[in-house]
View 1 (cartoon, rainbow, N blue to C red):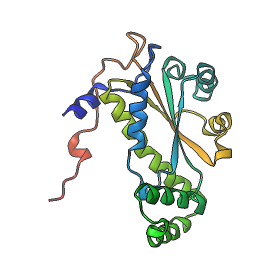
View 2 (view 1 turned 60 degrees about the vertical axis):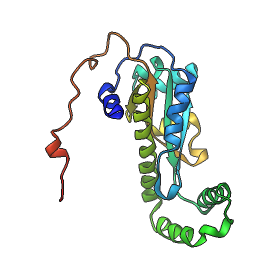
View 3 (view 1 turned 90 degrees about the vertical axis):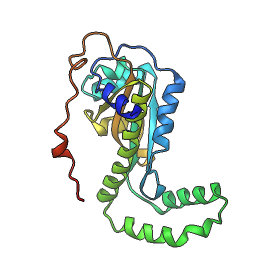
View 4 (view 1 turned 180 degrees about the vertical axis):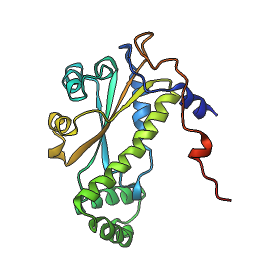
Length: 210
């Protein structure tokens, strides 16, 4: 019930107050994203934490001038791999086996099957797949922020290519997917604050097959 109450409390904050979010709370939100599930545990994405005011000023016009970019405390940018490679997949499984005290070849059969599946996709399909994985962590971060009563605004309204260029993501083989602004709601100037949270009727959202 605590989670449901937190999700009822949260909304896509339209105006941030400028108050800073404590570093430990930001870290907890990032930790929650880090612990989110992903397909085969590959975590084919990174989270970029931006608190630098000058950099936020540069990002704001890329995000169509949205005020939360500069009035918020931190930005979490979720950027996914542009494609799967042998090196990336091997590194993940080597790390996994090492951390578990297992031989590096322990997962070779599974890894070979996974690679065959992933490499049968086009690069465009691979990029779509990695993007989907990043959204699982993104949703987890939204929920974690709500539990901490930190306001968060999910944003897809930005020019991805321009943000990728600004942050040098292409050179790292990454593509920006979404931005999550963290901060605290302003007391005024936010048209959405105080309005009833509305979702589609549950009988249209849920189908039960018994």
